[in-house]
Length: 251
Ligand SMILES: Nc1nc2c(ncn2[C@@H]2O[C@H](COP(=O)(O)OP(=O)(O)O)[C@@H](O)[C@H]2O)c(=O)[nH]1
Ligand SMILES: [Mg+2]
Image (cartoon, rainbow, N blue to C red; front, side, top):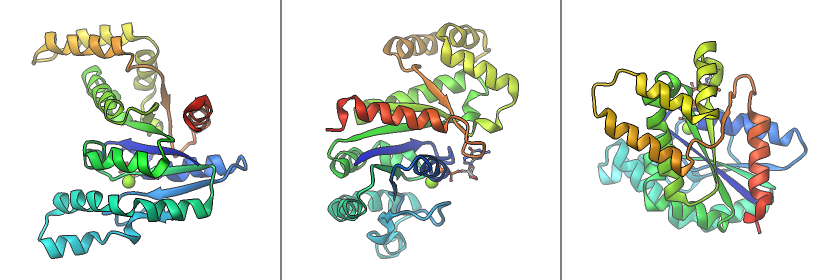
C-alpha cells in the first residue's frame, strides 16, 4: 500500500482533491482507498473508506475538557496516535494499491506537531509521500508566492518524505496570473526579478536572501497546476505519485 498525505493551508482544496484524485486513479483500474484524518471536519465531499472520526469524538473532547476549537483539534490529533493500528487494520482489509490521506483543515495542527509525522510513518510503514497544495491565491503577488514556498519547504523539512508541490484551484486564476505563475515555477530568475521589483515596505534584503536560500535548496522544483473542478493536472499528479512510489521508497 502506497500512501499520499495531502497537506496545505485551510481551504486549499485538500478534501476536494482527495475526491477528484480518487476518481482519477480508480478510472485507470487501480484500487485506491481514502482515509480522513481530520477529526473535527463536519462535512466531506467524499465518503472516506476509513475515518478517524470513528475513533475520536471531537465534540466530546470539547465538552469533557472544556476546550476551544483549536485545543480540541490538537487533543484529537494527538489522541488519534493510539488508533493507528486499528486504522491500518481497516486499510489492510481493503487492500488498496494507493491510500489518499486527507489531513486537518488547519495544516499546522497536523504538519507542525510531532503526532503528524508519527502518524504518517507508522500508518504507512514509511511508505508515503506528501502532496503540498499551494492555494492559487498565493500567486497574486511574488511575495505571497515566496511565503508559500517557505511553507512548502517547512513541510518537507518536517516530514523528510518525497514531496509533490501543486498550485491548487488553478481554474480560479486569471490568464495573465496563471501564465506569470508558470514562468515563476519554470524559471527562478523570473520570480526573483518580479519579487525584487515588487514594492515591499519591510525587510526586502532579508526577504531576498530567504528567496535565494530557498532557490538554492531547490524548493521551487516542479509545481503541478491542479484543479479539482476541471481535472487539470490530475494525470500529472498521479504520474508523480506513481514515480515516487516506484522509485524505491515503496519496498
Ligand atoms: N474553483 C475551485 N474551487 C475548489 C477547488 N478545490 C476545492 N475548491 C473549493 O475550495 C473550498 C475548500 O475546499 P476543501 O477541499 O474543503 O479545502 P481543505 O480545507 O483544504 O480540505 C471549497 O469550497 C471547495 O469547493 C478547485 O479545484 N477549484
Ligand atoms: Mg478538508
